[in-house]
Image 1 (cartoon, rainbow, N blue to C red):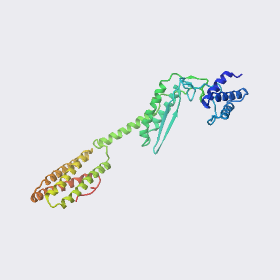
Image 2 (cartoon, rainbow, N blue to C red):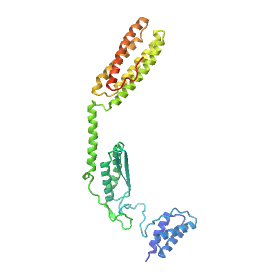
Image 3 (cartoon, rainbow, N blue to C red):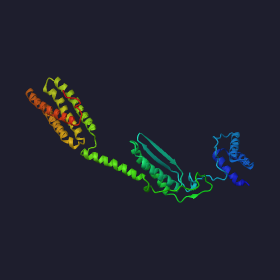
Length: 345
């Protein structure tokens, strides 16, 4: 026999949540639903009757829910504990659990959303964390995404640890009859040890490369590119200023471009000094820095010439230093496996 008071209470809550409207509309919709129940029809027929009644009274109704809650099911009310999405146990907590798998040239990211009870949440977290630790590293981008995924799951771990023992709620919907078995602890699974081996291998590779290059991580191609960029920037300034020097008719006119060349050589040295040079290249890099310094001093002295005789004498000294600087530049470029990008004129 139907408990009409309980049925009315259930359908009143359902109509308020699913249909809305004023008191008159809700009362009419509840009456239509109860009439269907009294006649022995199922909940779907009752829900459809409530919606039709509300629509006839001018209340728009959203697309019907194909599976209205079963008769007598408890509503989730603010302040009451959530029920687990899988087993229906309480208490439960809303959480999102992530898993990331690297596939060399692509990746797979999975997301599982709660609410889950303590046992189901623990089982899922251990499973997804283990899979992430086991398979997450094998891809260029995945190697960096995996640690982020593991950290994201810490929030779910915190929520799971805060839950009490799960208690089955007979009125809550569930997909499985009982909470999941948490299974082996994470450290008893292979994932953490695979992750340890991968991370250790990467660290060892970086250490070996660092030691092999005298503590410098740039490969030789990058070293060559950086040296070439510095060389080209100086050569461009040198050639521009020398055109100005050649166009001058007096030694005073030549002073400014000569000083500018000296300043460009100091900038060149600043760039060379900022590079971490491997042991095999340190001597040649130091030789070029010294040659640049000597050439900058020669041009600074040349810029102070006040007559033609001084200009010629100091110009000869500058040209000698220029030849030494070009030789040092070529030696370092050759050692790095790149040609001198361009020469001075």
